[in-house]
Amino acid sequence: MKVLAGPCVLEDRDTVFRIAEKLKPLSEDKRIDFYFKASFDKANRTSLDSYRGPGLDNGLKLFEEIKKEFGYKLITDIHESHQAAPAAEVMDILQIPAFLCRQTDLLVAAAKTSCIINVKKGQFLAADAMKHPIDKILKTRGVDEVSYQNSLDNNVWLCERGNTFGYGALVVDMRNLLLMKEYAPVIFDATHSVQIPSTGGTTGGNSAFVPSMAKAAAAVGVDGFFFETHIDPSVAKSDGPNMLKIEDLYKTINEIFAIQGALGYN
Image (spheres, rainbow, N blue to C red):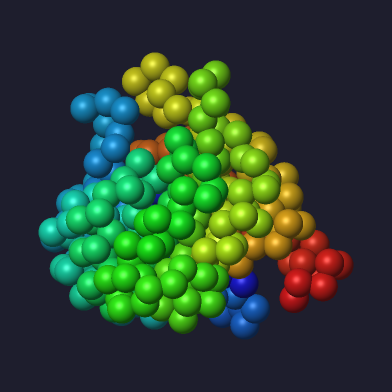
């Protein structure tokens, strides 16, 4: 099972390393294909005054330290096509943000690297629309037919994080997890799926729903899970209301394994 987990954004070095240290059991669990996740720049913050991160250069230096210290594989999101090549020198996965999943230049730039590409489904798109971003990536990598196997072979994933229905919250249609598996391996983003976008000058959410959403996705049968986690979400510099405390993350992952085992997915 793939698990992508870490803080929303790279904070100060001490905080990031404390979180990374707490996640070591995930990397040591033979059942888990673990990737440490964080953003070097949150370019889509609601407010101009919100913390964005250390930026590309300083962020990649911190990621290099994390990789050297812990040996983790790494994932981060890119927002502009010029970020793909330098990020790919350090990262193992380049993530395409949901609002940018139709941006051709960004997808092509990512596809030209050797990284795994994790494309988040736009909050405004139906599952079948995600065939087109996958098609752009696969064609750039020399593959003409979109299929789960071709995406698997060419390291292209899709990530579900819910849809906005106009009443200020994200709602996950579990059918999308099955429909998108026609095109690529599917990762379920359990923490962003409980967002309440733009509650005033920030994005809100309710992390109490995260374990239940993750367990529901486990029952449907997905290829992996994305969790944002923190030692103390109440002081996190981005997306704190959606994050799981690290101890709650481990509890949730154990419950996911129990569901997968009962249903024969292991």
